[in-house]
Amino acid sequence: MKVEIFRRTVKDRRRGNSYDLLYQLAEGIRAAGDEAVIVNENRSGPTGPGEMEPTAPMAAMFGYGGDKQMHHTKGRRRELANRCREKKIPLITFDGGVLSSFGNVSTSPDHHFRVSLYTPMNDGNFLSDNSPPDRWEMLKNKFNVKHESWRKSSEEDPILFVLQPSDNWSMNELDPIEWFNSVYKKLRPITKRRFLVRPHPNHVDSISKRQSEFPKDIELQIGKKHFIGDEKKYYRFHFQEAITNCHAVVTHNSTASVDSCVRGIPTFVTSDLALCWPVANTDLTKIEDPIYPDRTQWLHDLGYKMWSIKEIKNGTVYKRFKNKLGL
Image (cartoon, rainbow, N blue to C red; front, side):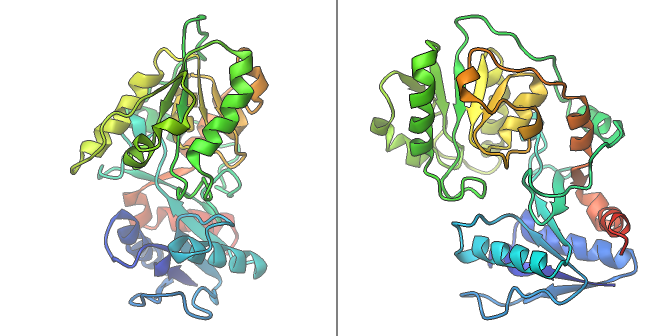
């Protein structure tokens, strides 16, 4: 079977983990005995007519593009996903893994990516429903994941707000400070807790220049403003320290919300695209009385949403999707 891998769903700089991943997938497809074709491998510049038109029985890409992000790489992703849905062509989609604050970071040679159909968000099909616990147990041991019971807080425990850049795939051009201020207006009248606001590590400089746009009674946690090499990784590691004594975490759709749910911190999200949606709190008016859903099956399914580079390269991931789709 022929599979088209759309190279221009990653940036034209032709380097980086996402770029490499597409070629690792091609290696896996060939290891499974099928044909892998890299589409528009050397093309650059504006998107050409028909450039994102799938013609094979299966396609593959990296990333996500929102409906308000129809420009550059994100626009190509969105266009390809729409065309594949219209033509009923399965589209294997990759994105960076979750559990990053536990060590599953892109710089790790054992990084596990999430893999789904059409979108790597909660509306994607990971073919993971009702999974057994084996892969979750493997990930938990590999990254020393702290899977704890839901935390019951005291009155003095703060609420941590996790921001995302507006150009983040899952924000879909939503301004993070506008998002925070709208959430603040709903929460401040019903809770007296301290509000800790944490910018995304890629967005620290931008947020620090706009501090005056936040309400006066919040605590903005700027942290490091610049990163060199792997220092960015250690900023992410601080997330586990930041949530240790929190009453709750609030975010729009950050993958960090998966980590806080795993850790047992009640987590409120405002987007149903969040991967933690099945076990998250979605009603902001319940901030002082969060729900504590059973996470067992959600965790088992999470294990089958994430796959290693080795499993991508040796054909395990491709064969799994092909077989489950009956192709």
